[in-house]
Image 1 (cartoon, one colour):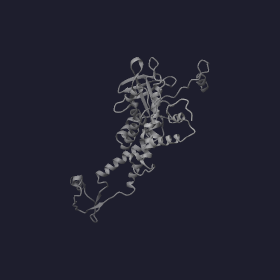
Image 2 (tube, rainbow, N blue to C red):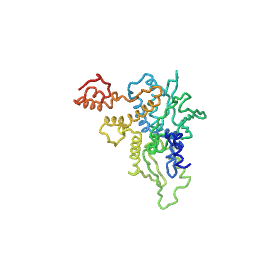
Image 3 (cartoon, rainbow, N blue to C red):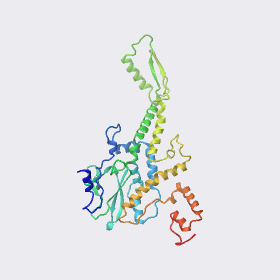
Image 4 (cartoon, rainbow, N blue to C red):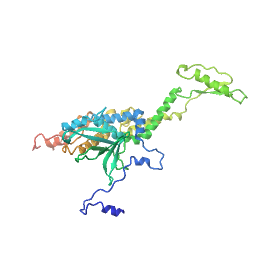
Amino acid sequence: MSFIDSLRTAFKGGGGVAVPLARGIPTQWLWSEERGGARQPFDYRSAVHHAFLDNPVAQRAVRIVAEGVGNAPVSETTPEIAALLRGGAEGGSLMETLAAHLLLHGNAFVQIGKGVAGCPASLFALRPERVSVIAGNDGWPVAYRYRVGEKVRDIPVEDEDGWPALIHLKAFHPADDHYGAGCLSAAGPAVAIHNEAARWNLALLENAARPSGALVYDNGVDTAGLTSDQFERLKAELASAYQGGGNAGRPMLLEGGLKWQSLSLSPADMDFAELKAAAARDIALAFGVPPMLLGLPGDNTYSNYREANRALWRLTLLPLAGKILGGLANGLAPWFPDASLSIDLDQVPALSEDREKLWKQVSEADFLSNDEKRAMLGLAPANPGDVK
């Protein structure tokens, strides 16, 4: 079929109502699997193990963002929606779990549990790496496949009554139609560098933080060196008598033309310390956390912790919380059409200074009526028809 024929079939029965053209085949992280690059395809399970479980910087960055979103005060809403937001996740709130999934994986899947009369009774966050999109003939999702081991369950986009069965939240991905791109993929190289630097430090500490020295054989004109038996005996004596913390500082008795020569690391060999700090800052950057809040040395981008904390809320926490709440409100709209979920900025301590400035500016605006001032502050009118 030619492109013109495709355009012709994009109209229903000649009525002139345009429908979307078919989307591409869903492929997770297609951009990371393209040929010609040295980087391996993104493996979420392995990345979570090396980053969140093994790397302290990445884990702390994720916890700061996820716990911040989970504890953010939500504006007053219906008791039913408030109960749904409080439950549905083990080991943390639903908001915290969804924020962590979006950060790490780039996708969050929320299954809607029905109760009496078909109304939502619970919201449960599914593990994103277990969920895959099932596309229809036109390329749009018709169901979601949840796989645990050999057990597979298909969750339709809408149940038999036409109600939503699952809410899919995703971060922006420029090269994928169905899946979002997580921060963990971008932070992967920096996490690998940081982990390798940590292992290098551990190996150095186990060897007195430097190659302690070398035994040099010097026996005049004899250039034959040590025999095999002598060499093996010397290695065994060094291992038994001089290696390990209990033998630190023990004097060494040399014989047979052996002499001790101390060694040290050159400045070039010590560059791994700066490399580790740079990798830690890259990890913080990938997850949207100011490095100052992670205690990273040498970062003076922000003048104080208050400014860094305010930047964290403005640039990371509020946008992420808005994406999650907006997606949940849209998914629950068939049951709660008037529901509007948002963060109550007046109850965020980190933004109190900004709110104080706004209140002062509005209160000093004499050309505004009281109700206009209240509207600018997000408050309901006190006296309808009030004039200046």
